[in-house]
Structures are given as structure tokens and as C-alpha cells.
Image: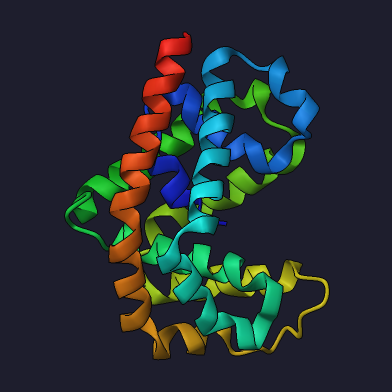
Length: 197
């Protein structure tokens, strides 16, 4: 669910498309796309694998796991997008707006590669400007409620957003201990992908 981080950690338009496609395709279908989109799919998987193994993310999951157990990672992903969106060392608010608009434009330009369910999501994402609005508490509240809605076995009234607010500073520390490492990792993965090209 951390669409902003995935879109930010890219090095080409094709990789943006691949980063979004990864959650919507079967593994065997990945080779039917152009190489730069395949690279985005690979990068998405590398981000997820690195994130899941990072000690700071393990700490962040402890905040949500008493409430949502195995779904804690999904809520940490959403929380991390809040801190990415508010990290002025990465982008100014104006540049985050430009980034969001660019991502929507790139995805629209590559609609022929997108499955119907991703196209439908993109329409909502554009209309409500999800990527930019992750910087707002209400944007994160919406995203967390969306995760609850999609989680089959979770009570829809679990106070995950309130838990986020109560633990925001702890989660912020986790973000700062994690994201620079993730950036370094993705730069290394991308360098390897470029050698293969």
C-alpha cells in the first residue's frame, strides 16, 4: 500500500509502471512487459524484501501487531508513506505535488499495460490525489481504513489510525532509521539492473 515510496524509489518512467504493476499481476506474467517495466517489478520486490527484513520495520510492526497481527506490515507501509511525504530532505511540498502529477501522467501514458483493476484504482488515485495527500493525517486515515476494508478477517472498527497518531513520534524514528538504508539498497539494485541492460 506504500504507493508513494514505491513511486519515489524509481529511476525511469518504465520503473514507475512496473512498481505499480507488481501488486496486480501473476509472477509468470512479468516477462510479458518491456524490460524497463520488468525492472520496476524487480525493484518493487527488492523494496518489499528489504523492508520486511529491516530491524526498524520490525520495531514499527510491534505498534500495530497487537491490534491487527499479521496485517501489521500493511499498516506500517501506509505509515511510512506519511513520513516520506513529509520528508523535506527528499522533496519540498511543491516538488511532491509535481511528483504525484508526474506519476499519474506516466501511468496514464502506459495504460495499455495496466489491468482493469489498476486502471480503476488509478482513476480514484488521481481524483483524490492519494500520493500528495499522504502528507496529511486524513490521507493516512483514509488509507488505513482502506486496508481495514480490504482485510477479510479484521474488524472494521479497529482503531489503527488512532494508534498511528498516538505513536507517531516512535514511527517517525523508525522511518529515519530505515529509509536512508532503503534508498541505498534500491540504488544498488538499479545499478545491477542497468548492467543487465
